[in-house]
Length: 313
Image (cartoon, rainbow, N blue to C red):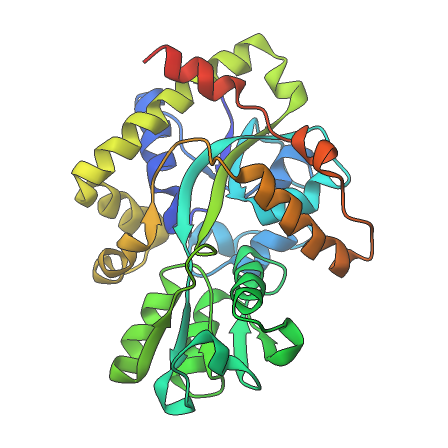
């Protein structure tokens, strides 16, 4: 396999991608550390911001020119940011649904999302976790201006902030939220908002790569392996734990406790376009531009590889 696959090797959402690439290549290829920026040769600022403790993450310069990927995983938040200038980018399907939530301190007088009014809430700005905070607040009648948003990075700094009581609540991807709950003990309360809990970690490429018959064939095969891997880790979660321990360098016990906050679905998210439309409005306000139309955003979705892969199973 000569398909160049990139993904953040310090996120738990990557488990099935690691297994699929290893299986497809017979152990000869690996998932390179990166994100959708590698599809278009962008800079590594997002990689640097999300870096935690892996050797790959520490080695990345925030201003380095990036090697190009054939496919890359990422939450759709970052895909939308890069696709403003590169509308040739494409979402192929959802690899993992991240089951996001908020962790707060009971001692801060918080029993529900509505109690966050006037509180200090930490997250990693301009990411899927920041978008989750916006949606959770909105669903509970609050605006971002109703809370004091504290931007922190990397992700375990967010866990540390609530444990040290410098903030009242946090939202970030796992396993940092689990670390926050572990540190708070009985003082921790988990706040979930039905309808805005799931966020989509997708496999992405570009129109140019899709038009390459050789690359496309390998994308189809990778997709089949991702579907098989998704079924496998639901039956044998320890396999995913083993890969994540090796790749992320997190403690096994922490990974095991946080594992249930992910749905390794390898499927098409039926509301993906609705999510892109809503999320692009949020991103557009920050970027000072007009939101893209539903029609324009629909061109960023190409499910043909997924349908071809499923037909061949």
